Image (cartoon, rainbow, N blue to C red; front, side):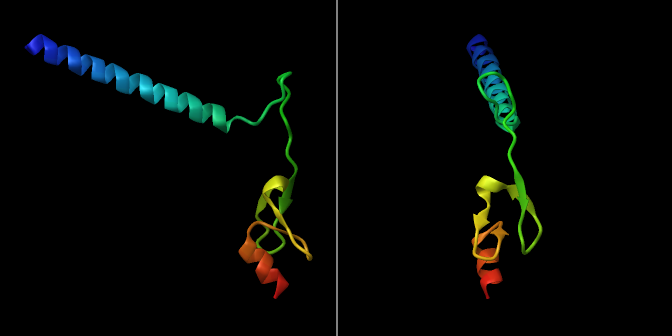
Length: 80
């Protein structure tokens, strides 16, 4: 019986270790900049919010009548 418990414990520890490695590997892959098939890094233009001056990628920015904004609240604030 004790050998069965030791075996289950070792398997559980191994599973937790391998699961954490997979999660860390996925997170590090997500943190890398996007690349093209040739391995070239895709550069993203950064813009500043006209209200708070926070820089963000252009594709995440909201374009308003009076400028570029980081959120809908700032776009509405600039409209007023």
